[in-house]
Image (cartoon, rainbow, N blue to C red; front, side):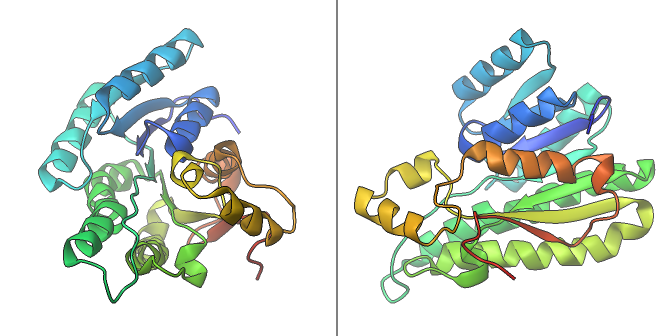
Length: 247
């Protein structure tokens, strides 16, 4: 599943699932534009990729800022000539029961997790249409499929990503562009590391495979969907959850 000659842009690339996706895409031969707010972590990631013979560049950006998205996408295309693969991974949580949730926390999560995916897609879609090839991959969540107490904003944003995925897939399929989503279950990241140990143990009991997932499990799914081998898959939600949700 070589991605040699392809240019990928990954948001939320500085850590966790985003970082794993960057490393996997670079390993497969793609040139990767790494995008996140933390410039120091991005530079470390680019240095690591360079040390392994890969090619990447850091583009510090806040996905909640529309102008930054527009400018960054233009810079990536100016530097690399194109964007073949877009991975909309950036995401945050602001957990609270809906009756106590502040409007600012609702807006922050929807803007970062969902609106940014729409804006990034909008900025790269013209180039993909012209070259008649593209892969758009949205990182959603099992909680966008089953909901979660205290995460009305997060679950809504991730469910919205699934709808966005299917709508875009229909709009661009005739130009050899696919749009799919990956729905991780319980993955060991900085976000889940903050959870109490007893909650982690309870979560594992709900996973038929009996273990928490790794960011690399998600990255492998992303790399597959970005490849030629996945050319007849579009509008699909690929579950990476150890069997936590089936069907």
